[in-house]
Image (cartoon, rainbow, N blue to C red; front, side, top):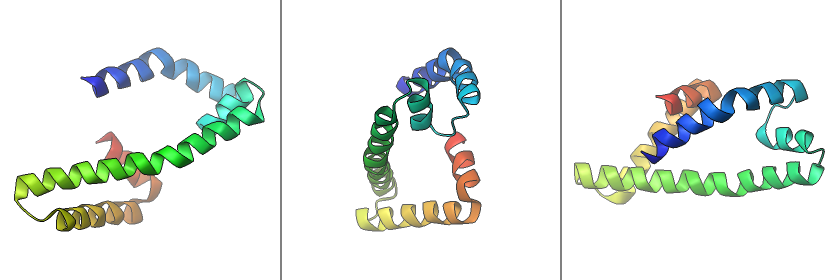
Length: 107
């Protein structure tokens, strides 16, 4: 429910306005949008640093969660489940690039 509600609010309430603002400011990334919107290089750098620090942590948590799910569902070793899941992710990222990642996330 949290994900569904969060996505709905983000896209329906804020999506169009944020997209318009990004196009008007010619911003390609969210930190760039914040920096240009508030005319602050500090905010832009802070946004970039936050993403740089916390996105790998988030990705790690997702990998661990998926590996625990695979471990309990298939009754296999955690390390093996983590390796298999990591190989699957690496394969579709390498094969599809960023576009493949976006399609996989949407799915």
